[in-house]
Image: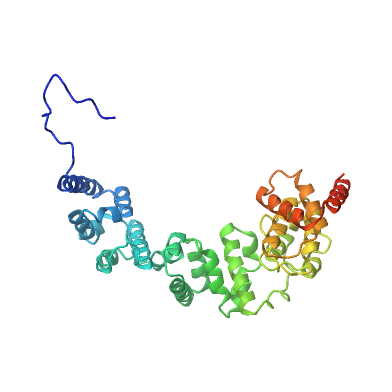
Length: 366
């Protein structure tokens, strides 16, 4: 809080104006920006933070120009390690992508400034292909890029790495980036049987990143074959966990589950923790609810009914009530889904019928 104006000592003239002029404001801003820039020179952590705030720094033109010159200077290039250069380069590339994608926004940099930033970024371009391409597979770059262009760029990168170092080179790259699912899709679109042998079934039960890559691979194979791929796959050497994970990635089919898992389905239904992947109009939907209730997964059954409800599918009223009753003993069910389902039931059935159904469900629960 400001202090009181002195009354006994006239250190502040009576006619003093506390208004800050525009000229004074920008002089102070330039002085502070110069101080921040001086502190960032020779300090990697401070430099990356300053580059992160580059959009604000652009308002102080002289310091902004100094920063761009410094980013491409021999002084900085000799100071930074290859990994540090890559970090700063990725920051600049992401900034350029964000501003070009949203070029119509009021805050967006004009193209002439982006060209200057691009010039500074070029001086920091990594020589290592892994470092040079990994920003294309980062979540941040995905959100600020032109989606169609990014897909083609990613495809070119993976095919280049595959041509230079084979599948092992691609799989090594996948461990160093975020978008493993995208890499899996690209590999699934390639006609090479050795890729399938390397990914399936091993990647289904390894790390989360490996499972993500396997999911993209399976998805691409199914799209390319219009859903036919996977039905005749040889699972004779797969374990139960691998089979269950594979089934998670394809539309759920009763026939396939019973054929592959037989009566040993407990592990499969017990570990499902997401929305059921199956066609909304599949005749197996009611069977799925029965299985989920049987294995104590009322929370997943509720979510499945909710998603079918918002897709305007006809629901089995009796099953809806059974699921809602089962959720009473379940701690982690989704309350929004439960409310939506109750409102649906209230609109679908009359009061006498409603009472009868609730009574039947209560009896079944006890």
